[in-house]
Length: 66
Image (cartoon, rainbow, N blue to C red):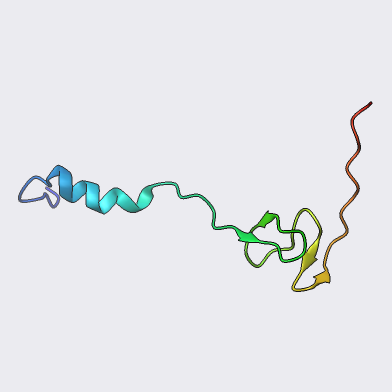
């Protein structure tokens, strides 16, 4: 017979143990160039800059048919 717990774990103890499993929103920074929200340590998806220089080229968005 395998190891069994001596006593039942209370709901509060189990809840404290499982409290770190919750989904958290991603931490977002503000781009210093275009002031949009971006992930930290990533190039800005709107303007394509990282650390003051152009890191990626962004294709122009197509305008909707007017």
